[in-house]
Length: 506
Image 1 (cartoon, rainbow, N blue to C red):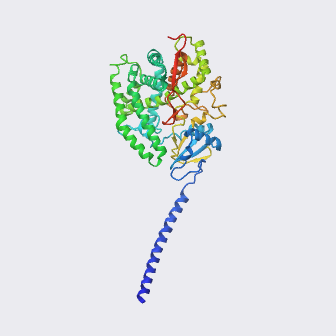
Image 2 (cartoon, rainbow, N blue to C red):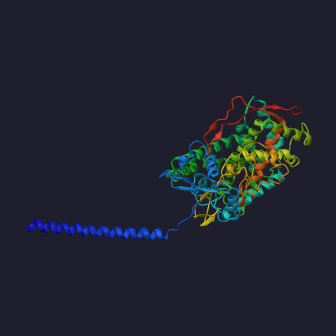
């Protein structure tokens, strides 16, 4: 009996000691949590829809395109800025001109960074050796960004001054006209938005004659867009592994596509003046090579500047051109007014030139309306706050990712009455430019991060849309339908057009 009592006492003592230790540990852990919680800043974040564990707000995107759903939510809730969660990844979406102006202009120095871990950021920011950064799209605000932007902006001004549209009119456009003549219905995305845009970009980057390499550049670009679309889908539907997959896709891209593209760029540079452009007319490559010679950039950075031109130029300018052509074929009264204005001002049978646009107010208004309604990328490339700040009356913690719903801004009834109607007249008699400083009409971004390629993009839009609208009657191809195709954002299937030459044009 004594043994049993002694054992029971020992057990009780042991259990009591264990309990005391556990309670003590629990108290310590609880104290740590309380102390951390008390130190943690409590932010007043923008409002958002209720979030589910793990997936956040992803189910709220069912039944529509992401930018359209965001716009609908903002309109219904009257939220100028709202929170949206992809799994554990928080993103803020701005939906009004006022908050857009505060973000990109008033506080532009705070919101001028980028999300560093996305595939596109890695692909267009990092050199293959991983030792240097370049580019104007994704490079953090700093010396590398400033040098690249300076080269690209100055290059476009020099292109307009030294090359202009003469070579485009004499060589590039006749090639397009010949391709149109050989087909009953053309795929406008391939013939115009891809091939012709890339030919012009090649002339800009490497000089007249380099357009012959378009057949090699376009497939490589298509491969890149495919990788981007696949990675974006993974980041959206599997956000928990999205960043890891971005690194994996970046390595695949770096070792495959980058190597092939850089090899091609070096080959084109080496043949300049030998197999093409014997007179060595001006090109962006002249400025880039001079910057390399002066030690402002290295060779990897030089090649990456070329890459950014082809990547940024094809999908944005090309997408805008295809969208405006679609607007014209579906709104024949607008096309007819453009043609009449050109007949009266430029002359029947006389080739439209880029400089003619200044004398064609209705044509300019139609281009602006087309860019309002049809943009290749409906949301602004995400920005990141590099310090704690406020926006629209809410707290914005450091490193928060934030974007602007450009598609929604363009359909704000307060800025554009009857926003879904095609009305070029809304821009007549108004000094609406593309700088977007009022943040109501934003096409190429605003502030420090405004698109560095907007000058060349507008040049291509004016020349290609103007030349086709002046020269041809438009009809929809029989095989074209309003269907959607998966991509970076869901896009309509490629536009097919029947183009019939107008009277007076050879």
